Image (cartoon, rainbow, N blue to C red; front, side, top):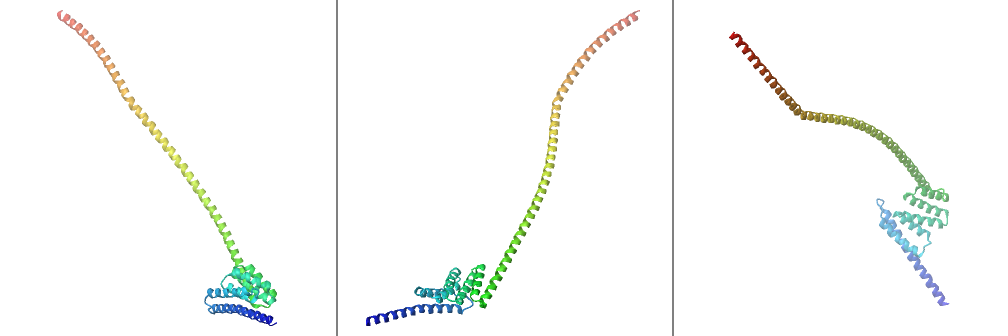
Length: 270
């Protein structure tokens, strides 16, 4: 009997010491957390990281404690570990015992999604939180804020699409004008090339004519000595003929003179 009582006392003492160690971790984590939020001008991620470590130590001893899990989710959220904090608050919401506790977890889940640029998901989380706690003013405000951001995002996307379509149309018109100008330039260049080709053909024809003329002149020049040579031969032939005729004439003259001389002599002698 005494042994049983002693064992029971030791078990109670062990549980009490274990519980004190777990709460010690939580208290130390809370201290780091509060030190981090004192300075509102900056985000002290180092202190939040220390708080996370202490909360995890406590939860390793008592993982089902919703309050400590909630504190861990807050520490993750403050460090901008949004994917982890979303999962943490989602687990709390599923295990929450009252609608108010569930609404609180869903509110923080919505905040994590909002800062993680998941607007649609955050809106749904805020709406679900309000279903569990319709009078929560902060959740209503955050829901309205998320819906406003969603509206602005849609307007921005619509404006970007309009700008894209407008730029597309402008580029289309510009390309059309450029093609039109290019076609005009091509036509001009084609006409210019045709004119140039015509001029070239004309120049080539003129050069050909000049070559033919030069060739003809050269042939004429080559033929000129032959003509002179023929003329010289003709001249010699004519000269020879004249000499022959002159000889004949001289013979006739001599004969005539002799006849005349005889006559003279005859008459003179008579």
